[in-house]
Figure 1 (cartoon, rainbow over the protein chains, first blue to last red):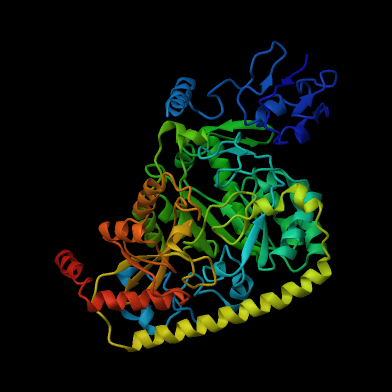
Figure 2 (figure 1 turned 135 degrees about the vertical axis):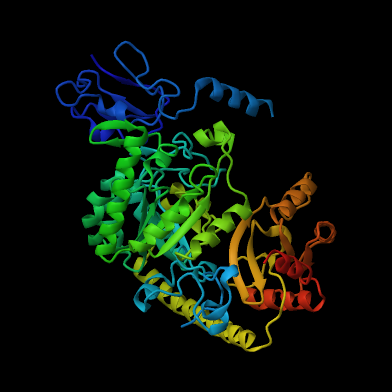
Length: 92
Length: 497
């Protein structure tokens, strides 16, 4: 049982001081979670702290590999609108 | 001490004794106590006058944020963009101290060090306060300031007051949580992410509480607001009134920056920013209640130099690594230079006062107001080539005198070499940025832009090189008035009065 940070992490440091298990550490390219230490905050908080402050959709995965903050959930931008806007920009 | 540049008096209420002609101090700091004015007069971000002379820098030590704003995208870390929240390299407090001292030694007119992000400085208390603690010990001649979204502010006031930080900027975009919910999708509060109106309500409460606590401690507070048409534009006059009543000394209404390529909510969803006119109208509407700041450049969280310029490239980590700084020696040199600048500022102010008094005593012209664009690289004089200007300062001349209105950024159309392939279209863009202006004052200008400006109805003028801006604007205004160019709208104004 552990959460995972993936390479879309922008190194903002917000999660690191919040982890009650001190499982989060700065690695070469981005932050990582030590799966042996991560408790998903069970017993400390109602919700996992790292995923509750992380500003990047999709950067933190649950134990099953699903994004805790899926596309659109943090920015409010509907994913289809985002795809459209990016396609428009590429076309220029 | 009086400053003749009208920044306060709205043009519409320019009669009677509230006007410039009665000799009141009209700049944005005019009403302040001498104590506060002494604190801000060499602060480029707080004093319009000072920003022609003194420089500032930001150190990017604070990456974490505790809220999400719809005008911000936390993914961006880009060297080519210039807007708040964007940086090239994140610094540790140790690197930040080293960089600050390197800049202070090499750009002695740098008087102010701010921490402004790229996240929220107070959401990174350890890195932010360690930087402040070390700088107040090691570089005591540098003013320290911080800007914040306000969420963690009430908890930080005590610590802020310990570090010799006498300037704090709070970004306050609304007082109404329903408006707030359209700007802030969520906040992180008491170990939870809180969405919508409830999150906005908590943020607004913390901002207002923080503002009151800072004022009670005697710390100067400036309030920044982002003007978002259709979201908070109708609401900001009330914000201005409220924060002034609580003791904020300056209000800075900034235009929303929203481009799809920034990847922000507003950018992607097609929310537009305000036009120059909408922004100036709102600033004028608020200025009845509040001292308005009009010279903000919305700079990056790692900007270095005079407002409007960025010399960050000269002070990257690898470059400062090789610099040997003797700060004691630098401080002595800085002191001499600061005194010389202060003297120059004071004598220019005195000259401006005298000119303004002379203008007020003279026969009042009866014309409509006119906007002029100025190319300057600092020192309050016209000293820049039209083609080298990255931005123009906009001044208004009217029967009541000359006042600074805003600045307008432009794409640099000529880099000075022969590779100006698409120069023409960039020149057209520059001319579009000057819409509404009727004259451009610069040190020199080429034939091609001269013709194009004339075709666009803007008079190019290179006759006032190295003259103080206000004097030159006044001289050109008088020429235009004498030539009858400023008569027509007088009739229009009468018709609508």
